[in-house]
Length: 261
Image (cartoon, rainbow, N blue to C red; front, side, top):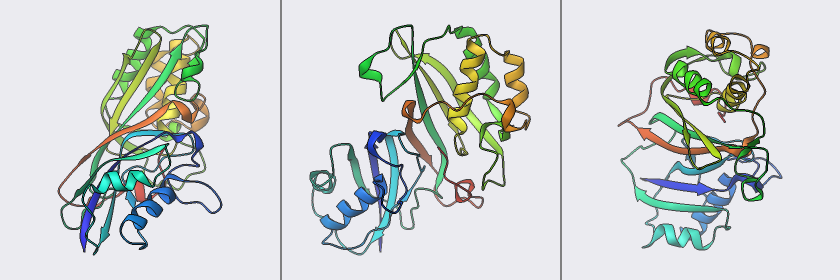
């Protein structure tokens, strides 16, 4: 059996998330159907680096599968020819034996986009959160700086959860100006919990608008209960951007507990 790695992009608006769900349209189902068709009508099971919720987008998602079939030339192009327009395989390549996109992942990267200002932009309607309230950039930067390192993110995931570990190691967190009106929050960590980034963003925007202090935000990173953090930002501003892999599976697999974003 040969291992294969797919790098994928999708516009998440019309998907009920990554994972297969009965009666719902999902990214996993569309891709498995397309890949299986190109390989001669076989059944394919994809493993993904980061499962995403309904409405979440991806620019650098990674999935893996094993097959004893030899893919045709221009494999990615052939898959794309039978995929719907809101999902595409950016690359299809042979991977090391046993490669598993979830268990070999060491770090995952996400971006959350925020449209600022009093006037909404119809072109960003499904791709960024419109935040019409004041934003003090220095407060956002201070919150991002506080995230670096290992923290207990209990306050940033639903109270009802399958997670048993709440500590995550954040290796990168920053806000940057993507355009004149769009701010982007970028974060990289060893793993993420369900809704973690969206609650972080919702809470940081409250800090930026003066509704709570930077110190209050920092205190939430010490295992505070969920009700002390802010609102969950909507899914349509979130993008899965990429993965850093190791050369084998992790002993502890955070994502086995529950889907992240």
